[in-house]
Figure 1 (cartoon, helix red, strand yellow):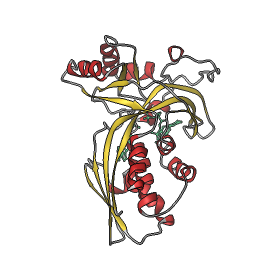
Figure 2 (figure 1 turned 180 degrees about the vertical axis):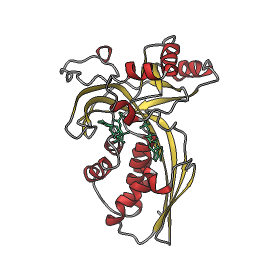
Figure 3 (figure 1 turned 180 degrees about the horizontal axis):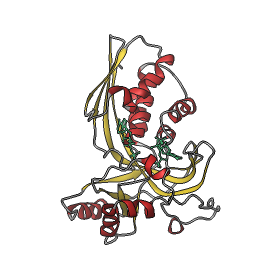
Figure 4 (figure 1 turned 45 degrees about the horizontal axis):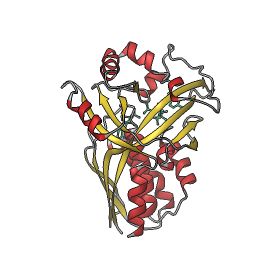
Length: 282
Ligand SMILES: C[C@@](CO)(OP(=O)(O)O)[C@H](O)COP(=O)(O)OP(=O)(O)OC[C@H]1O[C@@H](n2ccc(N)nc2=O)[C@H](O)[C@@H]1O
Ligand SMILES: Nc1ncnc2c1ncn2[C@@H]1O[C@H](COP(=O)(O)OP(=O)(O)O)[C@@H](O)[C@H]1O
């Protein structure tokens, strides 16, 4: 039980409302998160040295800045095995795309090493550690479709219909901080009432991102041919919801060459959690 491979799933914000800005500069959000069965591949192998090494698609991120490394470091105080780890990363999610790639990698690393290093921390503690790495990390630790409030740490699990999604990345990297610190970002959407409908929700970042990044507006327009399109997170990825894999494949087949895209089904429980549960039963 010294090695484990998990998929760090993509997330979509099926809506993202910004209610206000807190004293500390972070924003109180209300967002419906769901997970897709598609993401980065992380292979964890325990080693006899005491090192944390990351290999594979590290791109231009320095090891010490990689959220995977930061997550592994955060668990060192709880490690019950005197072994290091080599983590091999295959990036499948666009960075800065609004699909939570970095946050998902961090959460998946916490989940994997919690088992491999026999830390035996519960999900609540892991989520608290995760929150120090990013506002989006707790929802991946929880691993269930949920409405998030607070900065993203207060989670209420919800049941929604299983759907297929086509996600399009228009090749622009959008800094989450740039959008959240922009003066034109709306920050006053009221909290949802108990009877809310997806048709009455939105992504409050969309108007600003469309203005700053015309390619995102073009993507949203193009996707409208297939259904109501929406941006996820602070972008740049946009998505359309479809009823079947076949219709999702058709959209993907018609994608303009300049853009990247993928299709995947949503699932009530994140793929990383399902894979970890099977591995623990082995
Ligand atoms: C916007 C969301 C929606 O799911 O996702 P992405 O678009 O990043 O995928 C998340 O809230 C992002 O979470 P995450 O990407 O972990 O953000 P962090 O690294 O914690 O914060 C990056 C920056 O975003 C701003 N930020 C983030 C979350 C929040 N509730 N309020 C904020 O103001 C802050 O300026 C912060 O410095
Ligand atoms: N393992 C990682 N994968 C992706 N991004 C990472 C990783 N480690 C650190 N980062 C940094 O985190 C930033 C946000 O990453 P990501 O979570 O993919 O964005 P988003 O939340 O918008 O999808 C990236 O711009 C990158 O600089």
